[in-house]
Amino acid sequence: MTTMTDPPQESFRLSMLLNDTRYRSYTFQFIALLALVASIAYLMSNMFANLREQGLFLSWAFLGEPAGYDINQRLIEYDSQMTHWRATVVGVLNTLLVAFLACVTATVLGVIAGVLRLSNNWLVSKLMSAYVEAFRNVPVLIWIIIIFTVMTAVMPAPRAFRGDEPDATMLLNLFAFTNRGIYIPAPVLSAPLMGSAAMGWLLIVVGLVGSFFGARALGTWAAAKQEATGDRPKTWYITLAIWFVPLIVLLTIMGLTWNIPELKGFNFAGGLNIRGSLIALWFALAIYTGAFIAENVRAGIQAISKGQTEAAASLGLRSGRIMNLVVLPQALRVIIPPLISQYLNITKNSSLAIAVGYMDITGTLGGITLNQTGRAIECVLLLMLFYLTISLLISAVMNVYNNSVKLKER
Image (cartoon, rainbow, N blue to C red; front, side, top):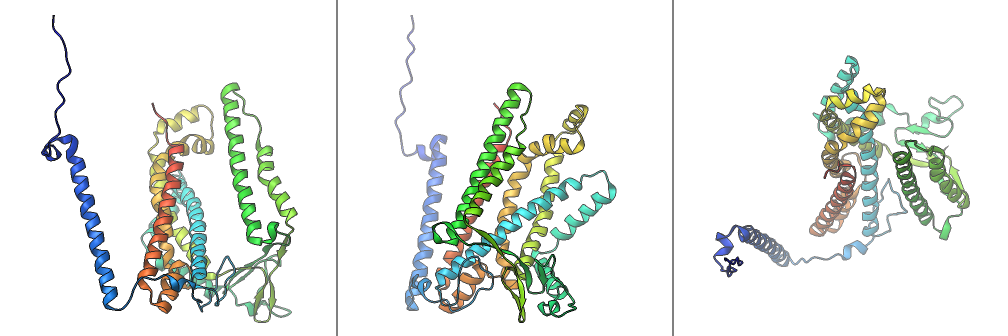
């Protein structure tokens, strides 16, 4: 009769940190971490030593001082007597605005161009190829300057709208396209909740987010119903109600009115002015990045087996339905990872706004504030922190979306 016993536990020895594969990777990672910390500590001590030699020190008090400069495009109240911190917030909002608009527009352009590039129509396919090759091989700064120059040279000046027989007229008496930008009707909340227009608009945004999740839950319920019974219930009118009823109720309660732009003196007054610098930056970033997204979409579609398309066609689905229901949902797992990089590029490339005078955070904090206060290190640290935070947030959100749409395998 034999007895099986566990082998004796080997005692830990320091030599195992290098000789044992179980510990070797941790040893090298720890050494790399120590080297990184030591390098950062050396650079920081060197920076502080140089600052002391010049009689300087890190201070953030300049953020509370009056800025003393104007910002032409802004989403919140601001004047030159407000602080540098307020100017920085205006710059942050301007950056987020142009990045959001460009991301949405670039996605739409990229998806359309990527799909059409695979079209059987020779002319459409070649036109999309020309678009992709022309825009992605020319620096985005060039496109920003070209679009801005065209806008200021082609659009009429405000004085062209004056007189009994003006050279230019407003579109529907609501929209004015000028070389100073586009003037559109501005929504105004005459009775916002809690007495603040900002809080009123924030409440509307919260309502739209709630409607989004409500419509999504309804779609999930309809899909489960279809899975169980084979029939999908009609939900389009309920979806419309979820989106529009809360929005209409909120806007009615808060007294939505419209401020129409009017020509007064040498320029238009009232309404909402979308300056030419914002439009040029927005469209240049969107068109430029859309060319890269088109290639990502094309690669994602081509990664799907042609047999999938043929099988869907054999069931009687039309080409548009095949693309929406069969090809694109599977292609997303290939499209989304590089799409995250394109969104990050849009956000970082928005720092080129200073070329056309658009006051983003690089123009305010990294431009005028830095030059006026001389606080280069503090301003650059804040700029790095902002772009790092935004990039990490975009990556986190898109990775969550990527995990939700990728194929689930056992």
